[in-house]
Image 1: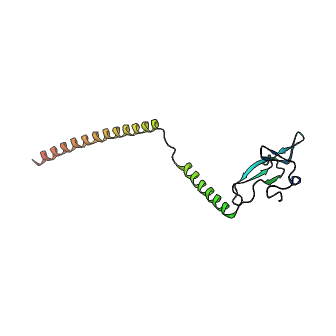
Image 2: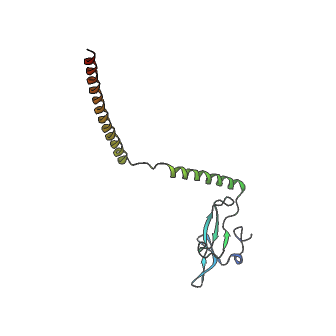
Image 3: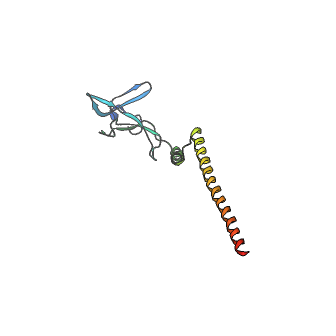
Length: 149
């Protein structure tokens, strides 16, 4: 197989060795005269979702361009299923980010007590206004009756 399909010849990828049943590959970058071990990563593109590959450990800063697939290509149905799951996961993450975080019980109780206190204060004001209106109506009726008599 070619180096792009997973398990090719060692000359196409540099020195390889088996260590704890995990294939180790090295990129072209060097540190203290030795080639760096390539990092095994996972692709999340629509074309290769979940497919693992080896890439340059320094790919963010000084990428030597080393790239080699670890996994074999997957069938079309696998790609469809994984991409559908990725989309559903993205929806759930967005829903979770926009939802209100749950309050702890103590904070919820404190909130409810503050709401009750504000309602009590509001009802006191309403009672004062209703008393004032009753007194005003009684006085106005008395004045009207006095004027009519």
